[in-house]
Image (cartoon, rainbow, N blue to C red; front, side):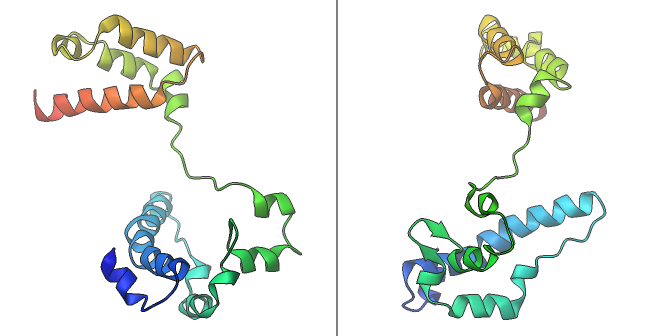
Amino acid sequence: LEPWFAKANGAGIVDASLLTDTMTYLPNDLLVKMDIASMTVSLEARSPFLDHHLMEFAASLPESLKLRGMTTKYLLKRVLKQFVPEENLTRAKMGFGVPIGHWFRGTMQPFLRETLLSEKALSRGLFNRDSVRQLIDQHVANKVNHEHRLWSLLMLELWFQRFID
């Protein structure tokens, strides 16, 4: 990231961070995900806030209008206050999460059980049948959310099936 911070040419930490995100995270992650998601359903997505005139204007603003205390996008939120309900402007960011936990309780449950509790998976000696069964049962019963543990175990087993077996 140092080359991008160097391009910020003496800018403050906020502007240097925004430049770095604009040059790396935005084109290499966020825009790619949006493009894939929209093309999947035959849509052409637009990003009006990425218009180069608007981006140049925003870049020219002082840092105090971009970040004030813990409020990001300060100026945008201040302008939108008259048009958008307050709760929409102050709510926490919501990422686009994949509902793995829900899937493991529903349509993917048979696949999860068959894969992780198969003789092949258990013969590797990496998984304990009773422990894996307990993780699945607790998750399905909504007692404990084990979605991340189960996802990791499932990905490990599928990796073994694809690259080792």
